[in-house]
Image (cartoon, rainbow, N blue to C red; front, top):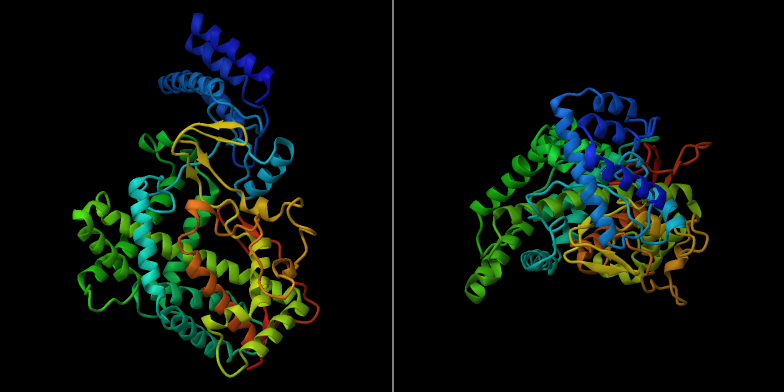
Length: 514
């Protein structure tokens, strides 16, 4: 925030403290509201009219805002926050942000203010921080994370994942083989991914066009769309306890549908039929890991973990796994249509390393380095979760010389990292070779390639997602040659919001190779 703005605000607050009436407060606050529309959703003339109305509600609101402004100034003086775009008191940058392109805005702001910037934004939905994705770092979170990781590794010990993938792609291939001409591949990619993740979490499998698959996908898409639109409760979290907007109520209702009526129901079903002698899926492994933790050290390791923690863990793995995987594969397939020479190289590598008589397996990954490099480059350019997940500073800390107070939301702009011209040569070009060593093998991960985040809060399911995505992608490339009708050009421009990016709808032709 610029110095002149801060000095003006300080003078006005001193005036209001000494002799202001409520009307004075309202008129002073109006000085800090722009007279134009800040974005397509909010007209500040409505706010101005509201402030001058003189109602009791306005008086209370103004008093609250004045107190918050004073608190905000104290925080500003106390901490050396990173620089960032100037905003309004209390509202911060909320009225400046474009929820569909915040990741792009943040990259532009970083060019002016540096790699660490301050932007005022959002709150999240969770069972009071009882999940792994949004939960605050601490002793309970570490135990929770360890149990979930242990459960996943139990599941990955055998060939269960490979078997699930092969079963799902074969069913999808049987359907695709019957299609002549162009079609939308989204339905088939969605089916493959949902079948795999459902089998991993709960066991069982779906038939093509199963109603539960459609429910999962449609409800999940609706949740992402509404959450990405942003609500007033994001700007003023206490508002949810006083008056909930229609959009916020919709998001709450969808959250209840997904977590209570689906995830918790699945958990209860697994718990009621659980047997230590017959571990069937990730949910069973999670229940087993909790039981073992309760038996260790007199149960100290499992203290503080209730059913909500386990339900939220299932929700994290299930929905995060489905959305990121299906959007990543949609981009990867579209990139292969856009770059047919690269598609041919992938298929040549698969033919040489695997052949055409069997599906690629987990054991083939070391010999499919170029295929994996192609997938990595597609993930970089698409960045389907552009700003990752917001986490909270567990204590006052320092980053690049700036003081960050405890409780501050910290976000990594993955899209910005992946599109930074200072980190990548020919940043907008599709170049798989940038991930290979001099022997043509997959080399060390570039430090600016972080689709799964990094550090203690790295994606829990990374070691499952990587082989899953690789095997599905390799199977699709092995089976078909993918292209568009003659004269059509693929549009790889992403659509979505700061929470999630996807491809525009597209149609392809699949020519059978196997």
